[in-house]
Length: 76
Image 1 (tube, rainbow, N blue to C red):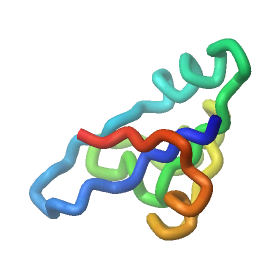
Image 2 (image 1 turned 135 degrees about the vertical axis):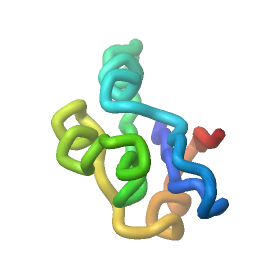
Image 3 (image 1 turned 45 degrees about the vertical axis):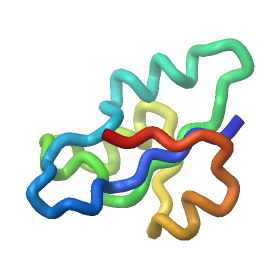
Image 4 (image 1 turned 180 degrees about the horizontal axis):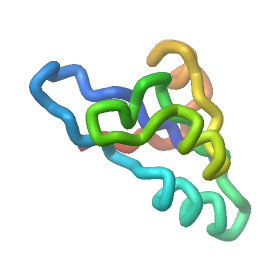
């Protein structure tokens, strides 16, 4: 299972569909799904990419790359 969390497309939307804590919880599920986040996902909420990486996510450079192998997509 590959979960991808892209940036929101609406420029006025500062929330994101995951936090570093929720990434840790997802990674702890049975089967340890891979979690990928789009670069800059949490900047509007104060979560740098390094925080997502520290929680076990893979940071990808674009939505196209993230969507390519995603089996699940989380959005607001």
